[in-house]
Length: 92
Length: 425
Image (cartoon, rainbow over all chains, first blue to last red; front, side, top):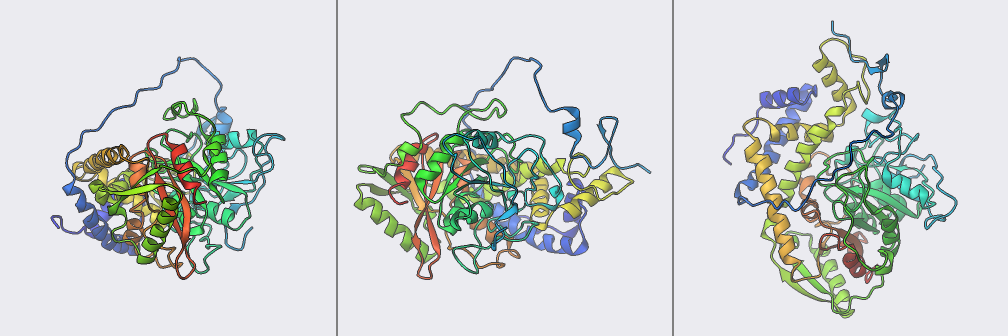
């Protein structure tokens, strides 16, 4: 295979990009599994460049106001809200 | 609750008094929004999430008079082939002891197979309706992309997935499809199907005299011997009823499962970014750096398979790897689509085993994700090609394990696969 298997640092970096904190044992397991999975994805190198048919068209509607979720309903599942807005973690 | 853990929530939702489904119970997969009834997606992240609105398919079920007996268990966010990754515990196969029910709509297939619901809705991103239908010995339909509204379906990989019916017979599945199909102003990817005579249920007439079936040899290579035998027995049955078959080559499908996983994981990494503990999900109560708070909430709220896919998707889209993985996967997707379109010029439908293996033993897939992914080899090409497919019971292995036969039709050719499938079930 052309690429070396991923190393723990790379897994840590991607986890950081994806905003997922990982435990050390997860990093270890993922490093090994990602090596196997990415090796399998190497098969895509043999795929020829293929033209993609664009047989779809955009769906438009008139830009008119209409009923939607109330602000209260839209916020109902947030863990914390304030004055009709989502409330995030405190920045120390 | 059921002995095999089919439901996450068994709260009953009553539909209208009259309608085509007035005497039916229709279980709904727990990634389909139900107003006022919690919708967990099989994830701890959404253990308290109560949707403020109904998915379009749920509205249509209620209007059709259906009673929803509960929300069915599933692989977390639809990510799995065995329904063992749910935060609410694995589902057992009610018709094959010690085996998985298939996934990710394992709860939906199990409650139908066990007779605890008349019908069920699942969602199929890479086989998640057809696989559990095959493993539980029932019927499942993955509609053409755009036939059924995804409004209210919590997205995993939105360019690939469709909601569809699971039922004991092809005719019952078709009746449920009649209720949920059709354009929806809330989902701009829905389309009006080309005009056709009669309902989907009416197409379940078993009349396959003169039907031409293509058999992609690539989808038989490497399949379990007993599965292949059962498949050919079912093909003989179809031939005896007037159908004919010929072999076809689909070289692109050799790359389909890899392309599917690259695309699905990439879309998942984007779709699941919203679960940050602020807008939705469990916050864990962390303070300080926002990114660290999100990362902590997501570490706690997501299970291992979900993290694996989010990370691999992030990797495939990251600088330096996008062209190598994501762009190549999109080429493969276009190639698969071309191959299927060509094969369907000389055949009415294409047939293969739904799954290359019988239902796996419980627990054996969890530590080997790659092997689990590769089990989706026969179902994922259909999602890449946006086509309709049905899984119908083909028979059983020597040990009594269910085997499913998959029939794939042209875009919006649901009646073709329903008619062909109804000759078997």
